[in-house]
Structure formats: C-alpha cells, structure tokens
Length: 287
Ligand code: GLU
Image (cartoon, rainbow, N blue to C red; front, side, top):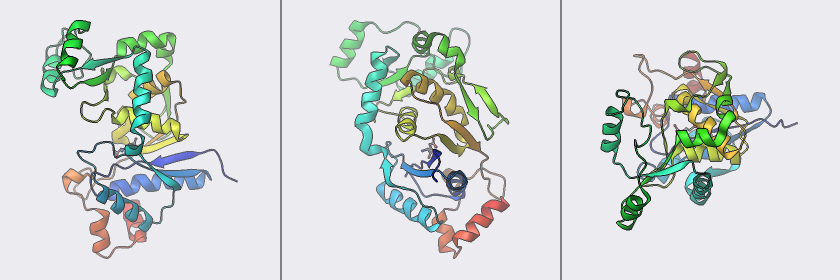
C-alpha cells in the first residue's frame, strides 16, 4: 500500500552530478522507499544562462545508473514558466511585491548605507519609488526584478506572521532540529522574479513543491536558510508547509565541501574510472 509520503530530488542541470548530489538523491529515494511513498525527480532549469539540456540527459542517465527510479513524467521547470508568472501575479495582486530597478552594485551600496549601520541583506528602498518615476522607467524599457516586500507581507499576514514555522526532521548547519520559527527577515526583500528570467529559485521551488504535493523536502544543509523564506511564500500562497529534512553535506578527502566549483569528481568521472553504483553507495557510507 502506497502512503501519502511524497519527496523529490531537484537538481539543476548546470553541471555534472557529483557524490554530494548522489547522497542527496539517495537520501530522498531511500526515505520514499522506507515510507512506501513516492520519489519525484524535478529538473530545476529556469536559469537558462547556466542550465544545459546535455547536462539534463547526463543527470538522468547517472541517476538510472545509480539504481534510482522515479515517478514519470519528470517535471521540467522551464516548461512551467506560465505557472510561475501566474503565481507572481497573484502575489502582486496581494500587494506584497514591488519592482526593483537597481543593479547588483546599487543593491550592495544600499545595504552598506543602511540607516542602522551596514546590514547583510537588502531591506527595500528608504522611500518607495513614486508611481511617476516607475512609469517613466518602464516607458524607458528599463529592466526590473520583482522583490517580495517583507513589511507588506507582514501586514498582509497579520498574526499569522508570528506563527510562521517549519518542522526540521534532520538538522540545520547549527544543529537546528524540531519545530523552528521561520525568520524570513534573515533574507531581506528577496527577488522573486529576476530581471532576466522572470522567476526565481524561491518562487519556482515553493510553487512546485505545492503543485506536486511534496510532503517531505529532503535536501542538503546548504539550503536550510532558504527554508525561512519558503515558509513565508507558502503562507502567502496559502499552501501547506512540507516537513523538511536537511542532511549533512559530503566533504572531499581534504574536508572541503564537494561542489562543482571545487572541481569535485563527477559521477561521470567515477564511472569512467570503472566504479559501479554499489561502490558509490559504499563511498557515501564511508564519508
Ligand atoms: N535545484 C536546487 C539545487 O540544485 C535544489 C533545490 C531544492 O532541493 O530545494 O541546488
């Protein structure tokens, strides 16, 4: 009998999978198997500047080689841009978004100039842009991002803001476990639609977790912080907050976190070196 447990592995096809990805995929896959639930594969390919379909093909092939099986069809975020646009429109109608025309450099300057001393995150303009200026910039064809206004979100949610929380079944990087108060303010006014791609990781991932009925999000601790903002977006969209399980990150032999930028050996490299899927599992167990 199938349970209602649904989890996912959600790689971005911007490079090859390495052991860290394999660990994440196994954690989710094994959890679904143990719970007699479903394991979903989602390709997070909204960032067309970095994602390549050749990587997607290799990822699917690597995961099959590892012995993982998932529910078909695989969801590709690039095929759902209209859904993200509609969700953005919904949030905009709620009055919790604003257009931000700043460049990355200007955002950093604003953060450094914050009235209460330099902050770490962007907390919005000191004075909201006038409707006239906004119209003029739009008429001028200036590119803008959509940011989530934390102060408007707080007003919108009222007392629900103070109750924002999530259940952590694994551990955050500082050992966080159990029911955790969500603190979206740690992120400031995040971008929900980038200038170039009209959506963002935060928007697409929360939309899809809800659309796909994900009950358990199982992923690396590097994404623990993002949960604080995901919980807020879920409350605004009135969708359930899944349970979260953030797992430890896999380090290489020198103790450095495995990441493509650290030139971590890819699964492709390991396969070429003659390793089998069982060897990979054994390697992960030993890490
Ligand atoms: N696509 C994200 C990544 O590859 C993972 C998103 C998630 O699990 O929430 O880092």
